[in-house]
Image 1 (tube, rainbow, N blue to C red):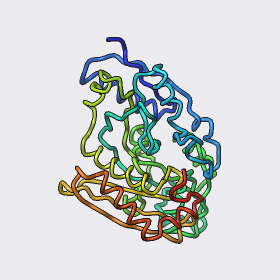
Image 2 (cartoon, one colour):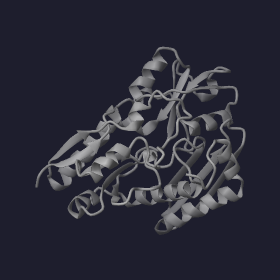
Image 3 (cartoon, rainbow, N blue to C red):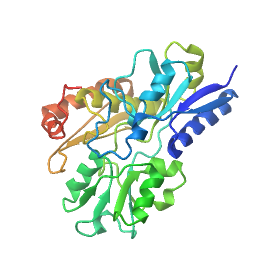
Image 4 (cartoon, rainbow, N blue to C red):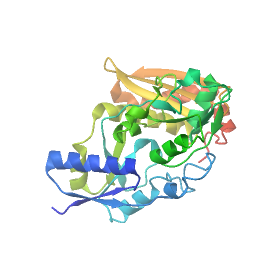
Length: 314
């Protein structure tokens, strides 16, 4: 068998994820792989403001569109994604035969002077390019100044060291994978700071008609993680949300039962709607959809409109 071609972005974190998949495939199947670096629209927009749309006009996520194009053109055999970057609508002809075991779902604070969140000075400047994070931080501390920041993990850490901010907020999973966990000042409880849909999970996308590759990849699938991500994505689909909507969600298995907590915030964090649901992991899709309907009934659609994204619109 010829080497499997793995499509990936070129950032250090994306390369870590692609190499991790390559190592797992080698361990399980003894097969060779080749990384194919692809620059995406999202890479070109890293310096854009937080209001930049999270998806292109055709609905494909800006961090994965070119990877999916390469899959459909048969120039790569599989693509590795952070699941938080994957829109709910998958192009015809593509599929996700595997979602790997989830890493730490939490967000974390890295402050310049090692102060935890509650100890940050009044009007402290906090760097984050996520509307979800901004809204939740302002919900707890309306005095804080939110400052947009883009770029990969190293870029953001350099900006913090350069005293552009008093603190930045990043995903724990990315820092763990890059060997930078020691830089974390405080990891937020996942209920205090609800993560993004799919945060911490790696997904592998293939062509649906490429059965041999899909079967090889399926050996890496983690059923518990898959159920949790399925519920979160069903919720996001019900809300017509994207990665720049102030929506946080966390699904996990508790005593064999799937439990999901979600909240939608106004951009300034002053208003919020929070709900929970639970049930059998086998019903993950239905549980996520039901929770989305519950949030809408409680007024989440109004908050989504405040964020400039009306429910039901693409």
